[in-house]
Figure 1: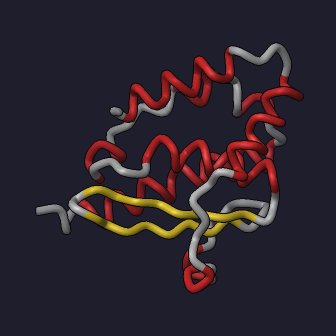
Figure 2: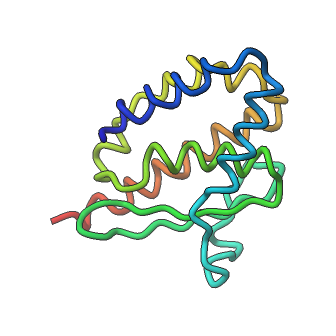
Amino acid sequence: MTIAELQEDIVEEFAMFDDWMERYEYMIELGKSLPLIHTDYKTEDNLIKGCQSKVWVHAELKNNLLEFTADSDAIITKGIIAILIRVFSGHAPADIIHADMGFIDQIGLKEHLSPTRANGLVSMIKQLKLYAVAYQTQVS
């Protein structure tokens, strides 16, 4: 699936829930399915700066596609990074760099987060795209 198709799936999934309590519960469930980062990568270097919670992300280039793993010490934040990794993992760095993130507004995520979590969301997106920029030069 393309990044846009994955984003559309997420928009449709969030539309199934009537209120934000149900959506938060869904995000918590998504966080439980997150491909967890290996403990060796839970380092200061892999912490996302700008998040109130601790969020570790590791990126690895495999067959010219970026694979992400992550973890967080907060359940909602873990759900947020799970959504982002679901969208970006397994795609070419250039596709990640150029991905439109409008789906975040479509599902109303930013407006339903506290200001500190919303800033963390922006930091997570920025870091994932920075990984893509860093790895783009290695794509053959």
